[in-house]
Length: 181
Image (cartoon, rainbow, N blue to C red):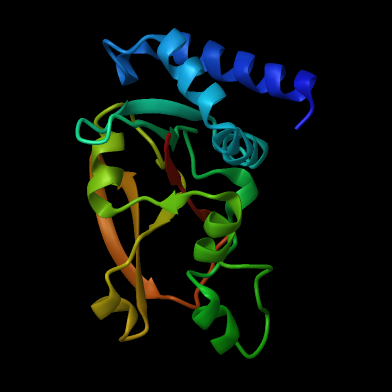
């Protein structure tokens, strides 16, 4: 990443951080910036999150490891990460009308992880997300082994977790990612 691109990304992240202090009370931007400068690989992932419409922001800190947790905080599921089935196995199972990729593969390529159901519910405590869209979440192996996958959204003032066939994909379903730094 060129120095100018890096600085533009850091400025965008700083602006979002400062506009949404309710997401990360008692965390200072100077500490975040220092951590990002010490872990330049994280900037590549954050650039991908930003480029695909995720609007990444810090939502907390892992008290055990001391890492800051970035998460996609766009109001709706990131627009550049929709119309994806769940994983490679689901993509390969489709006979026709295959999507371009899968949520699990795209997340791995970006260097991020799909949110767990617990992480998704914690995010929803910080605002109202996915009112018109839905987001794939990390699916337990026992559900995936039966051909299913999980997704979440917010409707009627509540957060719902649902199941669907892992090979399904919809224009209004994407995924949100988390990145510990």
